[in-house]
Length: 533
Image 1 (cartoon, rainbow, N blue to C red):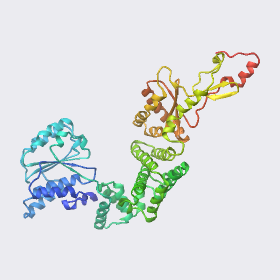
Image 2 (image 1 turned 30 degrees about the vertical axis):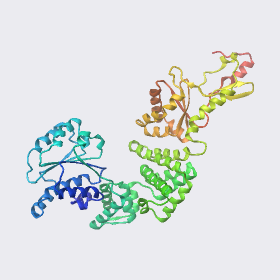
Image 3 (image 1 turned 60 degrees about the vertical axis):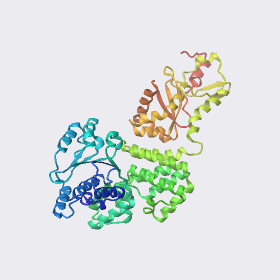
Image 4 (image 1 turned 90 degrees about the vertical axis):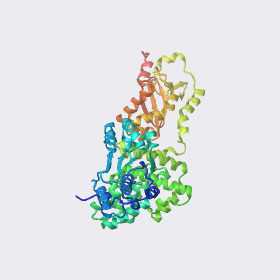
């Protein structure tokens, strides 16, 4: 069976570890001065070298003092690389979370090593241990036998009790820089006879987001599927990423506030096999690059290797066409879409919502504070001008559920939305104050619906009707889809403790027809008929 490249090229010494010099230097000095600790905690994201460094540390502390014994050194190195070293015990805490597993470790730790100087326990993903397991390990971790070294590795140190953290030497592993990942990939390509474009390796490195293992795994996959010849187009196809033309089309649409242009670009990219989440990630990277250029007035080192000269010039041009506020809002919108797509089946919808939010949110006359105060302003203006209808006509007025039209002679005026719900005590002010909470709760059940609500605003509450104003017809259509509307309605009723019906509109809310204007009723009155309740 062929061996995966990340295993075949796993570093065998501290000098081979990439991007963690601040840690390997300290560990080498500890071994050289015979000041090896009894417990270490390695913290870092996936694929940055925690377990590899732990294995190298286990080998080096046992090789110390045996430099002249080549046979012993070779035996230790082979035992670790082949996974048959009796004195190196690796435990996956994710599958051994209980206290019984830790008690077994404690019971066996008292025995002397079978061959080495130290018995080394590597506990990976240690944050997955239960509280009782941590408690059982605590005393041994504080004062282990002199022949035992514990190395704990985790990606989430916040879940580790402070009592455990205080008993370990903590080393924080950094994400591997893109430049160092590319250098390592060049080394692998030379050793494996793989031909790869510089731009292809740069795309792989940027996709890995600091994880060298992810980068090597992707290189291995591409080398197998492309006959040892890798181009930038091969990388984009494997990742589901779009080309730079799609990103530029979306940026042009943002600058011009052209909703249709961006929607067409997204649909075209999806039709060609692009992944919506990758497009969103590309937009975040590109917008961030523009923001950095706008702030520092120079290109960043990370972007300089990936972009061509024309693309770098585009970055500078965009800085003059887009404001910092719009950049920040756009980065936030696409970042939210990236996170929401993890649990959504409709990534394209979330991408479209993020784009439209960027186009519409900052458009003149549609700022969020203005939208929030729109209904209040209408109420104030209408309340000062509205004329009261004669009492004797009230019997002919329907129980209207939308902004009503009051008649005073030939003049008609729209009255303000009523901000109360019978029997529930809910008001539009209460809904506005809890709007973010509503979005958060909907997001736990239906992420697309929550994304739609972010581009809508509460308008009025009248009787058992809650009216929501959408910024765009597309938002209204998607939010009126039963699978989205039902979730919003159920969550809103639970939040406001009432039984409401949700209506979504754009522009002005639709008004119910006035029965007094019914031509049939008018004809009946002329003949002497009366309207009966």
